[in-house]
Length: 603
Image (cartoon, rainbow, N blue to C red; front, side):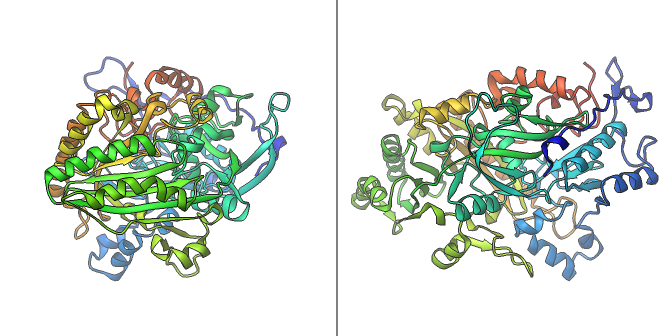
């Protein structure tokens, strides 16, 4: 990590785009700028690429599609092994030509960049940014590689890959740079841009006995989650990951390495706390607040099946009543899933209470199910353990082996494990994905009956997941106020949960013989997901959404993701990146560019 005296790099002037990159789009009155593509006159020469390789310490890679082995021999062992490994998120994360999502029907297909700078330092990133700006290249940025919307990949681009920048450093007393006179020192953790949450939790919680607010899926990148806002199992207690950001080191579009916090570059700092990744610069390091680790963490898990529609509708109503009274507070998070087969799945996490407390809270609801006609449930699992064991691989392998999967590559470290519940999304192909914030008013007595009716009707089309940890209704005042000071849509503050309606299939690539997705099935599923969403929108007409988990086709996305904060984000974007070097699908300022990010639209 750079010392303070190394933080600032000499400023480079913002370039004026060459006339070679100007063209007129039919139907538009004014010329627009055009990014260079391979084969065009503006594409860098072999000598240019070699110079970039030398300037980045040999860390420039020319990328080829891993799926070429399948194109050469669809039935070969190499192709079979590749698709087997696509169910291993560590394998995907370690390959710059792959992404955690292989595609989305009628939206995008995972395609590698032309070249990649496998950055080892902020200086490498600054060099790559300068090169992309001066050569007018499409730029992509990837850390963890998770992105349902495909924002961590772009064909014909230069990729900045931060995977190797994964250092985790604990601080007993951190003060953000320039804030020495206004802030008190506090425990914190600095995390490199390529670090993932499972390794970060291991360092912070298992080894150091502290807690940092991060994501639930352990192989998600730290930097990407924070920039998207960032919810995890315990957000009802600790707020969003973005609201816990103390400082960030960022390479902006002018090639400068900047430090952003509440005392320096405050607008950039605010934008990074939920304004979306890949839009304001390349994060090289983030420092996050840490907390005392909860004494106990635990799980509640069961499945409840109804024998009739009538019984299922009553179950939904009773669960909402129970949730309103007991689950919308600082202790609870995770998911209740209403399935089409008249089944309610309970997969909740808790913290700050022990197993006895949890059993007492759930006992009345479970007792009602036992006595109700037409309902059956699997034996409930209600367990707790000291907080230090929550991400302890040795403990989990011994006491909860079914809960995790291991990186199965030869020589992989024991720390490379992931939750079994996240296996379906490793390499998945998305059929449809919708999300919307659910205001806590839906749980009030005067709305709950109608809400239960709507959930039942929506579940006739597709399963509905209610993510109680995503949304801050019931959170302590300090968590709510900290999130209020971020760019996230204010609907987050009043939401008791995020509804997710989604479907996926195993890894598949459009156009890859023998490994293509079932497009007819995908489109049928997408239609059913849209139907369920439309029903739910009858009680949530605004349908504000979570940028990290939302539809590729999200309408009115600027308002849905950021609400009244979008204009400020757009203003910050114009100041930091007037030439649109950092453009991602449905990112701040992307409406000024063609969907592929190569053509600036006339203004």
